[in-house]
Image (cartoon, rainbow, N blue to C red; front, side, top):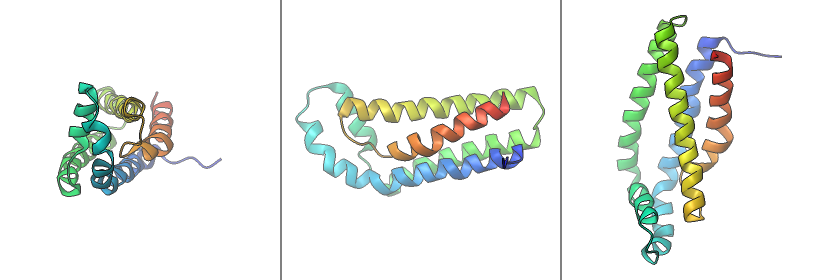
Amino acid sequence: MFQLELYNAIWLFVVIFMLHDFEEIITVEKWAKRTEYKIKGNSKRIHKKIWEFWNVNSYTFAKRDVFIFLTMSTITFIKIQNLESAWSSILYLSFLIFVLIHNLAHILQTWILKTYTPGLYTAIFLVTPYTIYLLSRLI
């Protein structure tokens, strides 16, 4: 069976996560417009908070994602430069666990609102499986 070199597998995670960010950027505006009527008629505070987070234009959302990309790239670079060190492993594993929690948030938001939320599909079908793959390789 084909297996990626560890450093390639770690760098590939940046690409996989960016595909997730692209899904969010592409769908966020249309989603906010399409979902607003469901939220405005709902008195639950959590619904309004979720909608407020996603109710931005693609440009604004992309600016958020630049910060995420830079942070992720920095953590990845540190891990690659210190592949065998314990502290870089702890840093990188912490980041991967954060990503899993992020993906869980997508699922919870979708469940709470009972509608698709931006980034859901890539969170479930790309990022979560690849994150679990990386965790299994690193542990």
